[in-house]
Picture 1: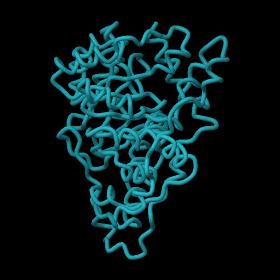
Picture 2: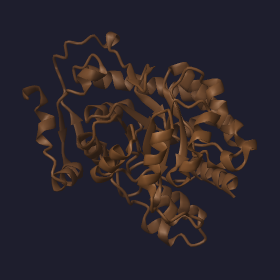
Picture 3: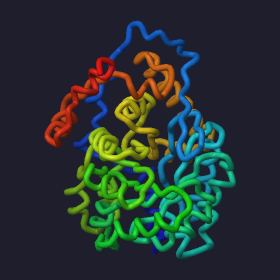
Picture 4: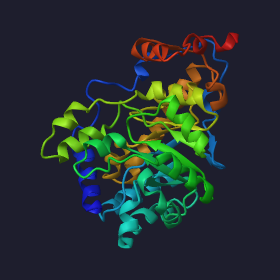
Length: 352
């Protein structure tokens, strides 16, 4: 049953080690060039950003987490209160459960009720596109994420492993849905080839959700009677930094960088790589159990660490941060070099 599966996912993410073991996000390989003469007043740094016509005080989205079980109601309420207070975006988890059982709609609609002015992003799977309009309408969504979770489906005992027709379904949805569609991975990243196909299909933004954060193969390993496949593919995927570069360089769409981002410093690196905003999920889920004040505390810390990074990089706003020089080293550079990218240009942007 979908609702019970949602509860299992929620409890496992909150209480078990579900993060990548041997593969990182790659942010340790990204270094912003320190400016000893930043010529910036830290107190006047502007961290505002705009996405789909909504202005956010920080380019941060509470990534899709939950919904679809009564236990999710309080969590989404607390997250939404924090999103509204801090004027950031928020996405809900897959809305399939509420499509199947309307009694569960409140576990999602509670978000809009408590964040009336925030950027709210709905969520439906690529294999359930026919429910897209229903999903968007039930929460008054500003945009709708079409989630791509082939890794999870492949490991999940009851997974849907027929991925034929995703592109054509997305294309049809883009023609009839009157709000922007976001293609969103769930932790394994998106490569440039798929980004180009998604752009051609009518997607208006891409959330890379790369590897290094929560591993859904790990989550399914805990659920399965036989955990062999989940453990074998625990670290599968494209690191967040690599996926961010690949997608930003491939398409002319807003890119959301997510997947293991845990601080404003990592967010600054993602934004400097080209992302318009970043997403964060797991730490905020754990905070939500303590109430929205705990979520707000983390978001304030996130904002302050972003401002410090911007100050040290000599950026007074997000636009200037995107032009800051940075060094790409280690496995991230190896991966990007093998994929044909010139990483040196990021270190010499001021000279170009």
